[in-house]
Amino acid sequence: MKQAIFFSVFKFVDSRVFWILSALALRLVSVAKRSPRWLVLSGYAKERLGDLAAARTLYERALTRIAVSNDTASLRWTQATQFFLERCKHCLGESCAADPLFFCQAVPVQGETEPAGKPAGFFKVDFVFSGLRIMGNLPRGTEESVSIMLDGVKIRDINVTEGILSSAFTFKVTRSALRLFPATATLTIRAAGGRPLRLFSGESAFSLFVPHGVAGSSPFIDGTRRLDKKGVPVPTLEELAADRREFFAIYADARRFFLERFGKHLFLAYGTLLGFHRAGDFIPGDDDFDTGFMAEATDPETVKLEVTEMVEALTVEGFSVSFNRRGRLFRLHARGAGIAGCHIDVHSFWAQNDRIWAHNDFCACGTREQFVPATERDFKGFTAFVPADPEAYLSAHYGPGWRVPDPGFINTYEDKDPGVLAGLAKALIAPVEYKAAYARLEALRKANPAIGEFVSLADRSLYPLPDKDDDLE
Image 1: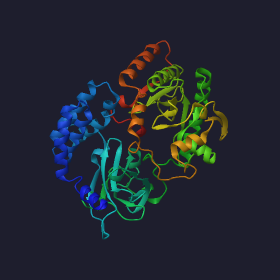
Image 2: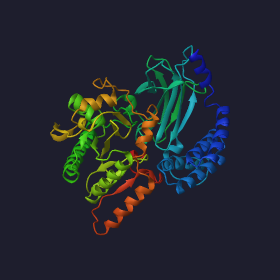
Image 3: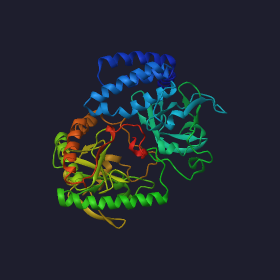
Image 4: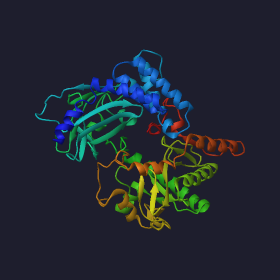
């Protein structure tokens, strides 16, 4: 019965009637609420209905709202809105920004052989500002994962998340990965048992056209490259080795600075700690470096003040700091390098009401003593701090199965407790707070030209496109 309801409901999704009703509802919400989100979604609905002129007007209004807003949630919509607006202009034949994604297409097609019976679920794709977004739904509890197939070759497994009405998945193929896609290819999704998913409109595949992709053999098809959990091409062994040398150099400098200046242990965290504690190495293919420290403050607002002061001290000493569109502090770049090249991720942990909190989404029963004082360990020839009780943290974050590698693991916000996310959001830096800190640092720059950069990725315009694709999340 539940599966019958699922297939009846989701066949309606992405239909013309669905988008007509969505456009009407979203338009009403956008009048009542000031968030630019509703104007953008209303514009997107109009775009799906082919009313590009109306969509363009709604996107322009959304950007006007963003320009006068003073909250992180609104600012996060800047780059997405710019992309949709410029894409509309492109399709209308108007002057617009240059973007290779405007020439990409995803056309629904029927596969050569259609299996009998109901599909495993439904999916859709769309080109967005950061790449190709893939999302879908399956009957609740029927599958644990799905596979993305490109010309019949699996390029990535994705775990699904159980919701109230259905199981869902979402994945984003980044711009850097799309450049390695074939110029033309067929994209399908299969459940773990082999059954295909269909498009919401009934077809079984998308024919992808990526003009700036690979004209010959794609490394994703011939197996020489893989797609990581963030939708980025897994670096080659040589690229990984070079990146990790930079990670260790930044970490070694930062570890000393944190200890000498702040009296804090900068310890390994998240996937970096998981790989180290499980195997004494990085997780295979992992291309980032996660660290954390224990804040003295015990509430998110005061943690934000403490971390902002630390960020300013780091920047004055020549480190550069950037943070993502959510306002999560912070990424740390090497002294004197600006925000070019590699960075390590620095997460603030704090103890509050018998729980430990940390961005991006960690909240679990615990104590400061499980983290600090941290212990010194050797990590591939470098000294690293490790939380006092790493297994308590790893079990709390990854679950009891943390010792077993999970290739389909992707950390998403969709399955997180909204109350936890709301609590963590109080530690996010707001636009007005960023601008005030930026002004203080710029006031010092004349006397100290060696001051590093302090950059909000959300505050940057999408166009012209940045040199680094990972600036687009």
